[in-house]
Image (cartoon, rainbow, N blue to C red; front, side, top):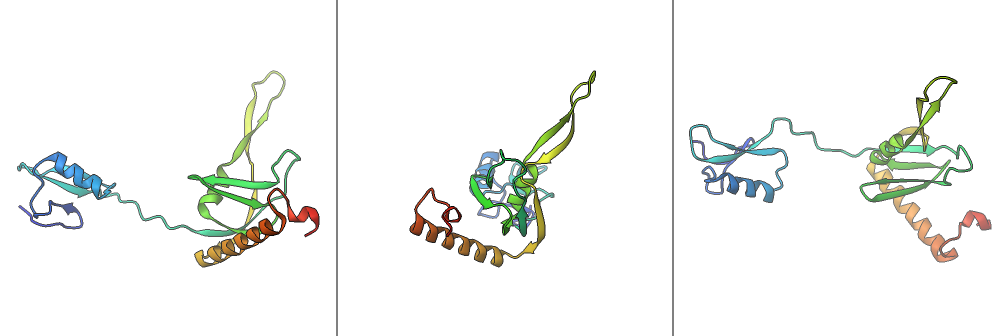
Length: 174
C-alpha cells in the first residue's frame, strides 16, 4: 500500500486510503477537484482520489486592439454591446480600443443568417453575417488593457459629473 499524496493520487489526511467512497467524494468536492475522480484501490477496500489524465491547460486571457465597424444600417445599435458571463462591455464604433479575447469571441459568435430563395426552390442559408464586424490590429498586454480601462472609466466618470446621465457629450459639442 502506498502512503501519502502524490501529484496523481490523493489519500486521506492520515496518509491511508479513504475508508468509504463517500468520504473521498466529500473531500474532492470540498477541495474543488474538478478534474479528478474517486476510484477504489484494486484488491483493497480503500478509496483514493485520482487526477484525470486530460487536465486542460489553464486559461490565459489575451487582449486585442480592435476597431468595430460603423453601423451597416440605420437599424443597427449605435454602440456595440457584448456580454460574457454577466460581464457587459459597451464600446463605441470606429474607435480603436482594447478588448479581452472573450469579448472578441463573443462578437465573432454574434451572427445572423443570410438567406437566398429562388423561385421554385426552398429558402437556403447562404452565409452567416457578423452583427458586429471589426478589424483586429494587434495583440495587447494585460497592463495596456488595465490602463486603457482605467482611462476610459475616468473619462466616463468626468462626463457623468459634468453632463449627468442621458447626455452624449458629442451631441452638445463637448
